[in-house]
Image (cartoon, rainbow, N blue to C red; front, top):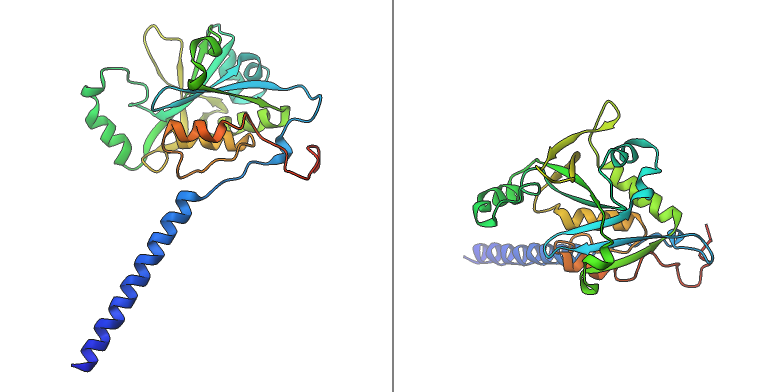
Length: 243
């Protein structure tokens, strides 16, 4: 009886230890911060580009000046040059079916469950030309403006381009919507509950030097909060042009 009691007590200690490790891991991941690179911060007198982060409620898009995309070499620039007119290009990412579909939500609940929980869902990058200045179309509490150095802008767009699934070196259109200028290009990434649209946007912002909390970037609100610093900042006590 004593030996059995000792085994039971040992098992209880192991169970509590395992639970503590699991809880600690979850807390660490939830609070994990991916720091932005201070070298990407704009230097005094340097030419900068304004990019807007837009909050659509559940989803975030980036509004980038068209020239910032069309003047780039490579697959992303080529795709942007093929779009309809518009001074701004909205960039977003999501599930290849659920994100593109604009039918009433009540008819898409099963597909939403599939997008969240099924493995290996295909995804797309949206490039949507917009004639309207986002600062006039989105209220101040629905947008953040980031002022990016040339280095930060290049890193951000490089990150977007790296997400494209290329065919013979070119971005491939995976979907279009009737009467809509938006184009949805195949992405090499997979959409699921562990990697949602706002996680993707947070990764793009982090590439541009913005500090984000990757796991917590489930909601648009979390991404907006992270970007509220208005872009990458130089490290305190270190010159902005330090290398």
